[in-house]
Each structure stands twice: as C-alpha cells, then as structure tokens.
Image (tube, rainbow, N blue to C red; front, top):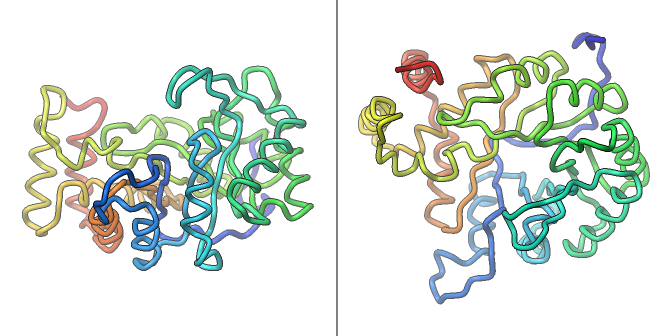
Length: 297
C-alpha cells in the first residue's frame, strides 16, 4: 500500500545539516603528517559547520571516532550502522545480521566503543534476505524508546523495504550511494523517499574519490571535460563541482539530499566543506546531468 506523504507520520527529528562527513576511512595516524591526523580532520569539518559524523561497526573505527568527537560531543549528530558481519578483513565477504536480538547486541557494543550514551542516527547497514525488515525496525524502535538511539535509518535497501519499514516506524534517513558516476538510486528509491518525506544521505558523492581527479576514460571522457570546464570557470576543483551537483539533486527530485563525502586529509576535508557553498546554475546542473546520464553515449 502506498503511504500518502501528506498524512505519513513524521520521523524523529534529527538535524542532518547541509552536508555530513563520512568517517569510513579514518584510521589512527601512522605518520607525523598533521594533515592526516583523524582528530584534526574531525575538528576541521566541525569548524566548517558540518554536524553529522557517520561511521559503522563494520568500519572498525568506532573507538577512534568516539575519541575524536569526545570534546565536542554536543556539536555532533553521531550516526552509526549495524548489520554487516565481515568474514575476515574489512571490505571482504560479509553476512547480514538483522534479527531483533542482534540489533540490541550491536547497539550496546557500538555505544561502548563510541563511549556515548546515545547514537543520534542508527542505520541498518544492509538489507537482509532472511529477516523481515519489519522485525528489524521494530527492534530499532525499542532502542529509540529506551533513549539508546535518536532516530532510525536504513542503508542499501530497496524501495519496497523502505515502504515496509516506514509503516512500522518513520525512517529519518536513507543512506545510499549517489554521484555523477553512480545514479542507481534515481530509478525508484528516490521517488519513494520523496513520497515518504525521507531525506537521502548520499554516500560516496565523488565516486569513492575518483571524481576528484576526473582523469577521464573511454566511458566518461566527455563528462570529465564538462566537469573541468565548469570547475575552471568557477575557480573550483572538479571534486567540488561533482559534490555540488549532488547537492543540486535535492530540488530536482523533491527530496532533501545530504551529501556525505569522506577523506583522510584535513586539506581535502576543508575543500569538501567549501563545496557545500557552491550553487550551480540550472544550466550547469543540466549539462552535468545530461553528459553523465547512464544513457549518454
């Protein structure tokens, strides 16, 4: 059954800000380079006005993130995720755990590692093929009632998953990949999110960093040329323009879009923060949208 956006219950309030910071790649600084110090990176994005810091138990860096935000906890909308269980090394094969018992177990473990009393936005990291999403969200709603989490999020799900979850409890955010080079979210998920009034947190908005270089290849040669042209005209980097395009997808689809760039350098973090102030013109947005269309030659 389709949920009417006009009558759907409101999600638990959470201020995502205009842009977040994805902490997936943060690791202890193994060098003397201050540009790579994780605490300095977090300070840089918070100084730039970013509120949401996003991690996950699967990233195996919650302790590090917890230390980095400890002295500024009141400024942070802290997001984390559960559900991915690696077979071995990070980014290897994984199983998904989304049963009610595991939801509570994972949350308590993340709270200990992060050294916080509440995770402001807690995501199911990946859909399960075996556990109904209703069971998972019902368990997450229990954590919310206890004050252990502040809002419920979903990531790597289908449009039908989102509808079913939202019927159990309003979903405060949907985190999916969205960039010039990956626009799969635009097929059905974005329409469902807009209908239900669920903001989209766009991870990997610069194509896992590839669009920062925009070196060009046979598939995107014309697209990278347009990126470089617009960047040069605006005295910006190509990565900043790619990020600004993701900001522009919100009005185009009638949904709130919050890009979530990540980096392991202070200098890059500041550049990403600055990109949030770039408002591309309708003509610039249209050129980039057309030339990077999955159907473009």
